[in-house]
Image (cartoon, rainbow, N blue to C red; front, top):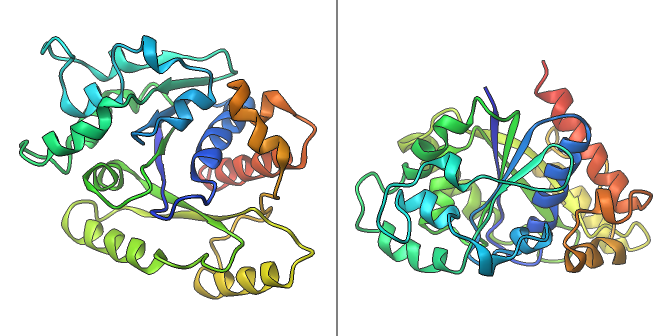
Length: 261
């Protein structure tokens, strides 16, 4: 049965989508069958894999609502799109997802709709990686209820831990009310620059809070990582020899190793 991992941090600009896309692609490169689920209304993971949002029919919006734009029922399988990248499929996001959050509020089982929708896909994939919105709204709650674990990208900057206590508080509440099995998959340090004293201070602070959960290789600041989405490619294809690619391949290897025990 496939493992569902939510990539989440309500603070924007921390490399969340970059990490979701490139970890998913790296897992695919390592021979895993991977689904990237874009549930961020901004849809950056979708465009980052070269998927045109204008041509979408069924997306993560329809998946959450359980119906298409014509009002007919939609299954999870209808929403899955193949990508040209090894081992990687995607359920893309569309701008309609922003409005879906309002509709979800009045729907039955509003917090567990994603868990129910993804159930048929667990047998089809080794990993389902979810790129969550940069907020703790109802869509992120759905992701945490559906997930086995959650992965937190933290940038090596001054406000790195700001809001993290709020995220952990939300997770504790989810664990108590809806999903008692959810656990922390790991903390991934992003935008790493070892030349800066501040970076060392942030790393030390993060290690104090999560001593056993930090990925071995931090993700460096990288122009190539920033460029890749504009070409609609993950870093594993755009620049396989870059330090950013090496960091995400290492993270994927750690995830595989941890989940093969």
